Length: 580
Image 1 (tube, one colour):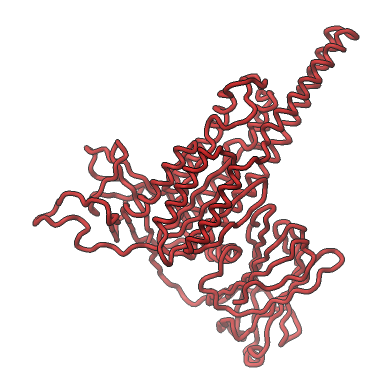
Image 2 (image 1 turned 180 degrees about the vertical axis):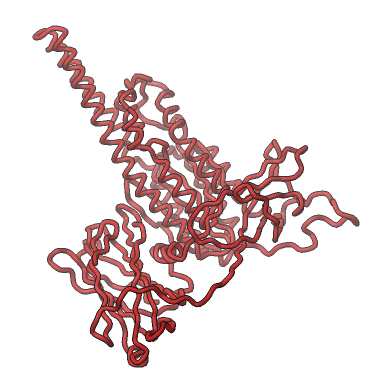
């Protein structure tokens, strides 16, 4: 059979060493019906109309609704900073709320994701200074933070997960240099190309008027407009592809936090997270009126944006998106007609703002974070994240797990209507399927060691063949797999998962293949002394750097993960990085 991974063709075969035949694909027997109950935790931030934190609320001050149905709260806690003044007593005897049983501090995990942008040093210093201050004041021993960048389709990890502040400081120093240096300005390039077209158009029209009159001039003008429209559309499609790869990589980073307990936060400084990817290039070419219905459908990013906040909600991650450049940062000022001018470029920049801000706000709203526009506002947002770490309410309710990867809406309300309190919390709960959980492990292993990986299996990678395919063989000890009685047989199953990562193109989606097997009862003892082999060929591409292979026992749900690294030319034999 064939197995297509993203960007790679894999051809697989399965053979039972103990019995030289392929096992039939039949259903596994079940262990029996079980009834499970899961706990849904929701962090809640409450402020008044002026934005001041409200402390001292109790469990009966809150209501929580799932898909419009009120849920009884099973757990409640208030987390208050040790430096924050406690509210006035509400109970008898002067006892202050939360004083009787202060909850234990939660572990903190922070992903700093920065898409390369350009800021003058006077604006960059306060912004990155606030990130440095947040990490220094919020990270404690046992917490974890990572710093990752994205630029023109390239993903780079400046520092992997660590609580080592010296290492994080070094990564932040690199981050500051990258974002205060001159980088490629795609807008300026596009505007320059449009100006060249317009200059050529002016000269051509003058020649056409002398030779063929007004009719020839009209034809020349139409041809020039078509050229600018084609340029704008080409750049916009490239921007959409970059946005798709960027969000895929952001989702993988979010999923890498799945194994961490406690509070999980992503600071996401993005250069472009738009409703219509690349629409600014139509503006830069002065042909925004040609952005018709077909173009809008092709450039619409709503599906990708939805995947971002749904991935965050499935992993309990609050996202704080920001556009640090803000207004006044775009080089190459233009008039509303797209012509270059000195001074401000308000029309173009407000177009960018209208295309970006709603998306930032949407992501923050759905995940329980806040959004910012401009370097000053972004610095204030980052400073407020520390308060979110230390001052909040934790609500929980019981539910029957569905494990269907489907979103259910959540709404948190306060009972006190007179005070008009404002509540901020994530808007969804998404219970993962077993497949999604295993994909999380495989993707997370591209960034950090997999937690809880105990299933043992061996991987052997051969030398690349002439067609640039790498032969991969997985050996699974049958004794390591759980078998269930199934009439005349013992039955079991396993699934193989694959994902890859690279600097160029970011992180792939995870894909998997499931294999069931059935062993005659008389052959079980002999089979347990042997193993299955699982073979496939992976077609390499020049930029593939890491390969993550996961194996999960379909009965016990135990799993194992192996991560391999490719040399930069992608033509060398894979070497193991982690051998768990």
